[in-house]
Image (cartoon, rainbow, N blue to C red):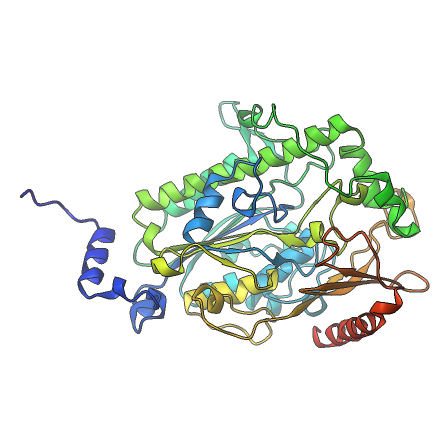
Length: 480
């Protein structure tokens, strides 16, 4: 019989199999004594911009093409109820880095950076201190370029502000930003070794629009024929009736949700073009994910590299005749979340977890997976408890807050009304503190999943309203 050479990966599988480890379906390799310490996992964290929860095939979308995201979910863990605690990129990214609510990290605009003390407590700096090689690619989103922590990274390709999609290489050939970020990801991986664990954070611009460009959704021309023969159905609430049912300050034509709706979705053809462009941008990210995974395999790093994918916030696709995000509605705050850990036994792969996962959970989860210390000021929870299938008491609600001030075109009103609220499994309470008197909404998510009927004035729901109003007050104080 011909003797075949064994790669390091196959050797480890054969050796562990001989010890009977693969038969221990209830125990992940990372949890075994000594293994995690000897071979800490590599981690790739992928962040998409404005990708809502229902834009992957594995989440039931039968139109969009996301085979690589779907494959990660099929072989990993899919969280179907993942949310952000603030739906705007600067604040959400600060929450992801720090594991903190906005009330604690206090980054509510695009000009505020992390302090040096706060930066030291973020997951990349904690991993750096733990001996990881760290890299960052893409839209950083927290503070101006002059305050970027580029010198603290082993590999830095961070971009300030809102980057542009269209670029050219040295020969003058067209290159889409998503493709460039994919190439940079491969370059980082090619500089890694088996001897030192790494954490690469890739922060895509896609599928965010190019706000200053009338085309808005500028996808790679390579995907121009995707979805061209498909008719994208309108959302149930993309109607004038839905808009008319809103309070005056939420349907005001000066609000940013209405201004951008006219820019993207005003006519049926604009709606089709915009959503297809949005889908093409997501498919472009999916292609890059496939290339990253292929490179991990080529470098023999795939069996010890965890991949985490989440969106920084959701996105209105004409629901309530809105565009953008910001408000506490489901389309704005619910995001995709997939965690692929190749070390999990087969019995733990393909899990679908329905517990509430938050963007503030990412930092403590990454640190836990790496075996690093989790700073006390992190407010998120470690998702590895759920990944490993353990029974645990999990959160029943979370706090939503959006405190951004925006006065474009010289208007005095805040074009993105501030929001606070509490989301439970059954109900959602939202309040708008700038309004006089404060305006409140209460939605029964079980019976009204599209959030069309405000129950705040319904006598039958006053006990629920009072309870959630008090819970919101509690959160506001405890999250500082």
